[in-house]
Length: 411
Image (tube, rainbow, N blue to C red; front, side, top):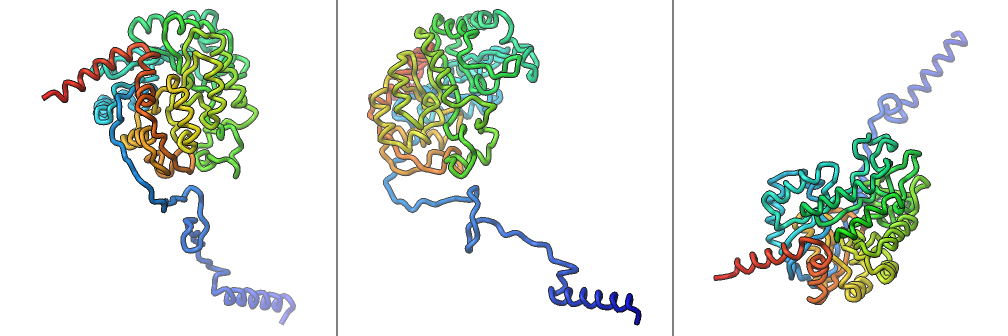
């Protein structure tokens, strides 16, 4: 046998030995099937699969209707219902069952959608809705070219002020500023427009003269400005929505944004400002208290923040008791009816350790909340009295609602 033949024979024998050693897997290996990381039978658990069932047994006092008539000052009936007449009818029925006298829709853009949105809500339910306008920053400019935007043209603020005056004449009750103002809208040079840019002071001044409040959403939860790592308490949420993160040099810090908003509030003492989402700082109510003390024209509302308020029930209850004339009720809805029931339970009972949302997993932190058990006088200020004082058109509608409700119970 030649040397070459012997080498080939040895190689073949080696390959056969490997084949037999691994049961043929060296030639035809079975595909590997990954096991689910569900925490069962000793397996690891992915956080997104975590569905803890509480073993705590405590008293429950469920609520299916608010104790008093409610004005929901923070809703989005354009963005969430998209002009569906059936969806509107269905939600008004939910309002009726829950004792919601009226909602404030914050979706009336001055880009021409305002009239359409008003018609959608007021054709059949004018007494159940008030509408806030929105600044049309872009105008006829193109979205990806900030230099073409209307807000960078001379006289923009004055023109917007005139638009607002006309809107108020037609029954509009306020102005809403979205968080994109400060976090997304840009100058022609590519830098972000600052919240306290003095070019827009005539708009905020006009709101004061017109007697309409400004609901302003500036910044976002504190965790959204932190790195998405193992120390971030909202990691699970941000892993599902990484685009909600504002961490990085391309964004101003959260403190910069909030301080800029406060400078605007301080420059316009005759204009009423409502800080959306507990002035977007429910994680630190001591700071919010300081803002309310410093700025008598500042109010706050509760939309989508019972998750934060409810994990600090003693601090939150004290806050509501001391500033009951400065806090308004909001939901950020329309939401499913179950979410409303949770709100009534949170504000009206002393229940312990319950879910703040009907969603699984919970959408804003992996924790539960505790009720505030607010007294009737505070509930009435929260649910409707403060809105009646602050928002044009609310008081008259509430009187009609109460008359309607009283007629229902007459024999």
